[in-house]
Amino acid sequence: MHLIRLPLMISHRKNEISTTDLFFKQNIGFQCSVHHDNFQKGERQMAKKKQIYKCDACGNIIEVLQGGDGDLVCCGEDMKLFEEHSTDEGKEKHVPVIESAADGVKVKVGSNPHPMEEKHYIQWIEIIDGETSSRHYLKPGESPEAVFAGASQNATAREYCTIHGLWKS
Image (cartoon, rainbow, N blue to C red):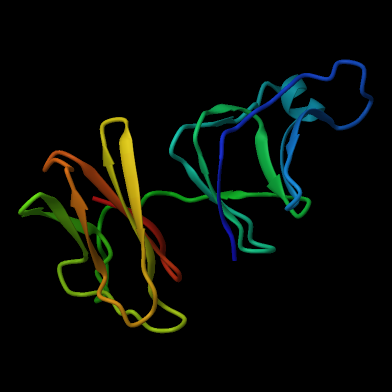
């Protein structure tokens, strides 16, 4: 699985006769497109800054650095936009908890520690403090927490669970 962080760069090609008007492609097979059908129906989708998308076919995950019109496509299929969950349900707790630390903040996943098993774990924790963001990657067996130096108590935290998706404080 790859985590790809790309700016959404789109350019017009007016003379092309295909279902794709706008196109950006990396050698990994990721592309962004806006289809003629969507223009005609007025159903254009806009990718927004900081949104997270995943390809169900190959597992690629991307974060939008700059929003724009277009469908995010990977492996020939539309990528799935992750909804940011913010309310815990059930026994497993996912909502990130931000605590003060000596030189910033500590983010713990859930009010009870989240499992960190081989197939079910917190892959990363991110802090968003104004226009600044930082991400800490985790592996199975590690503690589901991270310290972010210089971040304020007013920051927002997000985390990605390999089974239950994206969660936000």
